[in-house]
Length: 208
Image (cartoon, rainbow, N blue to C red):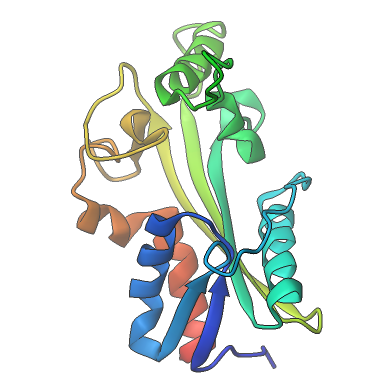
């Protein structure tokens, strides 16, 4: 039988206030109080896994062991069929730009351009199928864990379109839509996204 988090406090293994807010809103109806690893001063572990599940579990276990509480972490990214599943777990890394005046950062247009450039090398008939993946991992201090995986299938377009998304959203058109993720209102995107798929599975098993 799957272990349940129940009501109480859950550590969200993130230092991102926006992600904490988003996850808190999803879990609040079930009586779960969410606090972030950042607010507890917990360190961010090195994500050394080669799969989304491995990296999500690394983050969840680190937060659970350090806090003594159940912890939830997510790891997500884009896989492109014609690129052998890349960028995959390195989705964010592809946006890393060179240090400039001492300040590192991410350039998502550069990352989208890199993907498009690699596809263009394969010719105009290249398979443009892609998918966004999200893995949610819940870990307890005693080492037990559960994992939920969500996927959103689609295709890549060029040039980028839309202003409402982030990351690779402006070039990703989910199956069944003519709009990119960056052209779809956030509320509608949440209904079909990879994260929504993973959370639906989590809610069904944890609170169903």
